[in-house]
Length: 167
Image (cartoon, rainbow, N blue to C red; front, side, top):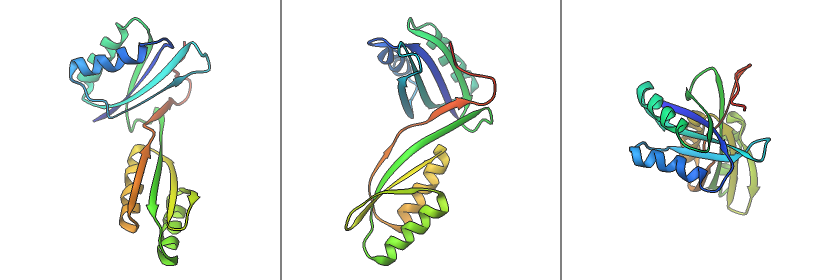
């Protein structure tokens, strides 16, 4: 099962490298990772999507807590109701001819995607949703048009309600 691990750590040189190194040394795969400063510029938040059962994720979080710059760690299943997780997808597609362009526009309307750039024979589409929905949208787009290039942000997530990963 896919797990989202959220980490608050000191925003210092090498801190992200140590987190990634821990995964590498232990043989854990990172499916995607995002990192950025929080509202406090001295603290960064890293969100990692990885695969593993509860035992593996518990082992990872315990090892993360031992790292010098780590302040707080929390994990949840990707499809947990306790977390709002989203990913941004940009996909460049060939859009040649009126019929294909209309099909792509209709697909964007159905999924709630946006066309953010138009050239004579290509569109760049933007879609923001859960990773599973991004996968569904990308598959549907690939059935309608030739995909030239994709860029995915990786999962960003925040806890619902009173729970937060805050110092």
